[in-house]
Image (cartoon, rainbow, N blue to C red; front, side):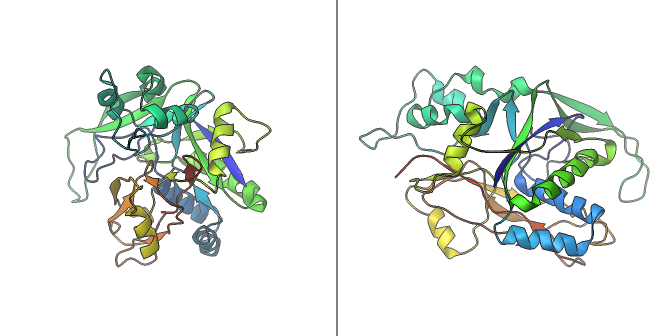
Length: 330
């Protein structure tokens, strides 16, 4: 079953910048699915035990649990990544967007799902409708650490970039999951809301509340939800857009990426292992390169989850199985 969850953040949030190595001074107002997946795994360990975590990971590997990125919403409007898309005319030449629209649209990262068809046809939109800056206030917070990893006390301040979502704004995600596990997942998500997601959760960041996940059905829901359902369940599309970072599982999926009609962006993913049982000192995950959400592929793919551990005591799984949004019938 497909369910949509809308998260209302009760605290400021910090989600790491797209480029690795920048630190805490940069952040973004959305959360990648692999970050969310890691937080879920940590919460399962806190609530249950390692056998339950292994069971969950096996379910994900089998494709029975699929997650989108955590994406912006404003009221009933749901945003999706701006497609990596070449706008073409009937004569197969690239379309020219007039009046400086192309330059303006380069700055836009998300568009309302209800405007997706119009954007794919024309490449134009009212920029103020797509400006997700209306969703949040961005702030730089100065903090002073007590110690650093060298054990020496330091007095210099460092900057942390955070976001606070405005009223009736936040992040949503879509999950495809077995119906019999929905109640368990709701309880897991409720616990994670008290823990927080993203960076600096030990300082109280990233806490959220949510209503029970709404099952996506044709009969009920907002226009945005109905549009999502139609596109998520279309199995005869000419192309599909990824709603989360994707890692190809084999050569056949790499060939889909290399297809003439595919358009994609690669993104490096790294970071530190959060499990205290993994190693005695803070240890980085193996860096990998993934296909970014919003990439448009000429065929369906499944992706995989990847062990990015490096000489630690247990595997560390990075999520790379995409939810796919149809862009049009064949």
